[in-house]
Image (cartoon, one colour):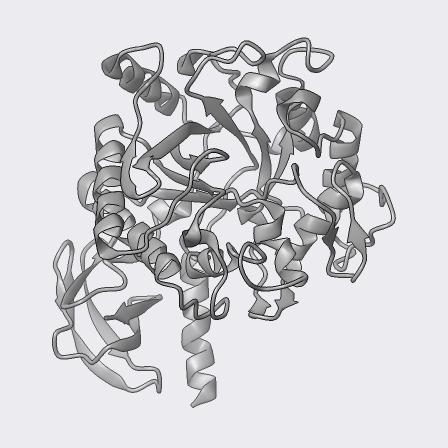
Length: 430
């Protein structure tokens, strides 16, 4: 029976992996700052392929009705600017949170306000998805274990993101892009302790490891952190970049359980664009290049950290920076857009402005988790389907036609596997 389950599990994994070219992810300020001035959205450097519009924020710490209003231009102009970037093959996300915002979904009212307001913003502006850059609030505090968080705020945030994804698919008939931008304490900090901020994002990342597009940990404004080799590393060095990144690529143990490794193409390196962009953690172009080349198996070891995987990770997802506005400032680095230029130098011929995310092509179940019915997205034609329980027993079968729904009201709550043609997918029935 274990062999049967392993085969089914392998089908599930093969159906959710996707590939894309290395990306340059940048945060764009929806405000004017004298030190890092406002840039019209459609005038940013062309090398940025994923743009995180900063930020959607709640009405107040106790009211999770999320708000976003373009600064400096009308709503219609801003929508047109988003469409211009999208016509160039770029993805434009609405980033949630930021350094000055707290998100706490401590009850169903705030959870539903969060879902409805975010879904409305995505529909109104036509964003390609959301970026989770929540830096304060109970919804990102560790509880229970990585696999089974118990705090209501965390569970409500997971449920909210799932519902926003479902709403997005209903509106756009395509899958929402989802990225995470946690600080180091909330991820690698889980190796030191698990509770509160320490490891706080790990249950969230784990819950969406199949659906997320990228995780780009903020390797700045950070204290010292353990690597998976048991040594401590400090921000602002090539070693810090390599050690913190390989922790995501190899997985690591915490008091809340083992955090399973992420595919390398879902991990991007997050560094400040220039020294003034963050309180600490800036690494010069040579240091960034040396670290990423070593991580990709294309260069020598730049410091004391030794990769656990000596052949490296050639499919690394790319780079992220705070921020596009800071990157444009010519007085912060030796030249304007030095970070974007370094990205192009590092990834060279593997670059493409156009991003192909196979999530938009792969068969997927919606909604998932479901209650009494679901449908199979991105599936054409008719085919026999089979639903297996966790013991590998067939509990339901039939013929599925494109855009139809499959009823699950006869199934008990639990985890099931759906097999159709050469695809097998995991279904959660509430």
